[in-house]
Image (cartoon, rainbow, N blue to C red; front, side):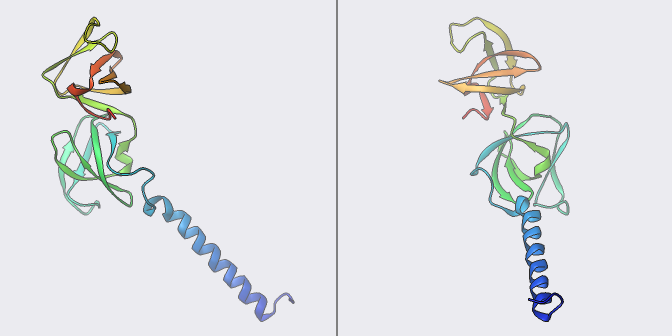
Length: 166
């Protein structure tokens, strides 16, 4: 084909159009693609203050303001960059993905939950975590989870917490 011919220009335009479509798909792919993991899944709050909204947009009003970093939440629906979440009380609403992390955390639901030296009822209690205490989980198995609350580490019964225990 001769450079500058009509066919060459058409092919060039087609190439540009194809590149533009590919770029647009790559740009929106992260936002509108299917979630990387099936819902529901566990997440936690990345910020010390996070707003839950009644709909998936900043145009919707906030129905809750959370002031607890690492609070565990369950993601129950994905819509673009927004996640419909459920908090430990069962309240549901929408949060922007940037407010959420995959860091596994949990909140104590028992009145007082002993944090033990090893994953056994017979193990020595190291600390006592009160209801509402939030900590990070490093592993869970056989009904016990390794639980870290600000550097105080121990094993806690999975039945005494709500969060990423699976």
